Image (cartoon, rainbow, N blue to C red; front, side, top):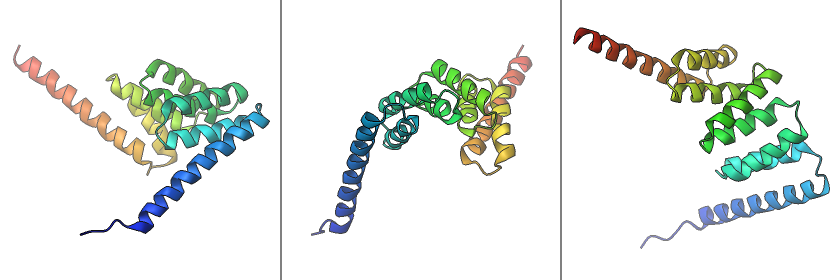
Length: 166
């Protein structure tokens, strides 16, 4: 008979309690300082890390309203929108973030993913390239660049095949 690892279970319970406490603390802090957009950003990050994309979007939307000149508020909102499948809203938020900070990697990667999903290889490659010029080891951008190349190669192959059969 295998007994469960009590230390692992205790660690998980402690982590869950810590998350609940962090959420409660942030909610209380936001109630106390409703004009503090940084608190909304922090709550959004917490919700995002838990995969609660709707709650993250709500928090990031609040942050974007309170911090309209902060690129991170808009790029974080863009990421939450993209995770929820709201590509149009994600693109608008990402463009806003890039207007504020042309090097915002999160916004550039959101746009790259939107372009890649739409089969717009050149635009996706440009967005990834901007990220990779600043950080050549950005894993997300490297992976998307591989996808861009693979999709472009497949498109070229299909085009060649269609021309040879005509």
